[in-house]
Amino acid sequence: MTEKPIINVYCDESCHLEHDHQPVMVLGGIWLLKDATKDISIKLRKLKDEHGLNWHQEIKWNKVSPAQLDYYLALVDFFFSQDALHFRGLVAQQKDRLDHSQFAQDHNTWYYKMYFSMLKQVFNESSRYHIYLDIKDTRGGRKIRKLHEVICNSLYDFDRNIIERLQLIRSEEAEILQLADLFIGALGYVHRGLASSAAKQAVIERIKERSGHTLLKNTLLQEEKFNLFLWQPQES
Image (cartoon, rainbow, N blue to C red; front, top):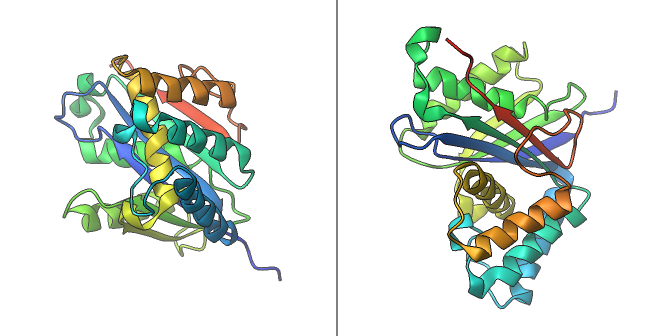
């Protein structure tokens, strides 16, 4: 029997805390075949070389500036030129207005539900998945174990034959995870209605141009390159 291929999924999040006074939370991940990961990582490092940057300099949305605009535009073009790379993002809107008590849940439960909603469009029973999340704080280990449990239970994957691995890594160890941060940052910027940086606006416009999407509405479910879901809370 042919062994199922392994898909690596590199995930990040923005404004996920309950009391951060932010109106949106963004979750997202870049996924690709495990066998393509090394090649893509090498190409991303080569792109840094071409723009005179140190390999250890992380790709980050908050580093987008006029001085590095060409590099960040090149990163967007790189993503859309590589057939191996795919992005799935979820924008949870009106987060600051949520009343979890009305749905017999707490913020953590809602967070896990949102993560599954973001990832479920990526999953296919014909593959195995290794999911990597950026380390955010010292409580990450407990959170990651619960998230793995929730996702596997939601897929009836009790033996973890589909979601084989879900673990924390440091963003500086994975260029693909850093690239996910760029797209998540752009989505958060758009949906928070920000417009103070011309450089960031330019990156957003390049994403719109290359994806063919406005970033303001859901993509089709079957969209494989740049898939976006805008979540709205139910009316109580």
